[in-house]
Image (cartoon, chains in turn purple, brown):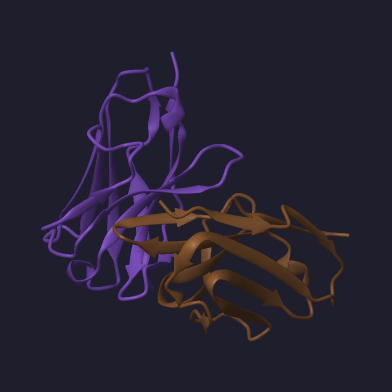
Length: 119
Length: 108
């Protein structure tokens, strides 16, 4: 059974940093693009970042460009999101998401990890 | 970025009814890159439809998608109690992904 398990969420002060991890299992992690999608409390879904299967290219939403870095370790089947310069607007559940190859859709989602930015 | 606008914001129906949810794009979207998701409270979203009209694995055939260009539709025939949830459309285009704001399908 495919699993995506996020970790690393928590409470951080404005301006602080946090690193999220996502452990993948039961599929060929190295062959799939991966994404982070977030959802602020009571709000809709917002795509954050994407990374190619070999890690050679990345994409970011304008709202996080220059502050967040997506990366992966295919040997460890793990996806990361380094978040710097956090603001209260970054408070959200962050989902690790698998790309459905060739379709621009997201076919499997982790359960999410909550990031709260507050003083 | 392409903006997706979903309507209605809330849809109140009864089990057994049919539901029609709309997703309108601010500019033309490739049908290949339009998807629909279902999200229940406290759960992660689940892929329902990809490529505008293809059901994802395990999705019942009462869910169907259609549309092209700027107008897309998710249709649910014969609503079951477990279908009451929030539904999002999503598109991929020119190195960016966007979601609609969601339609809440609630029990009347």
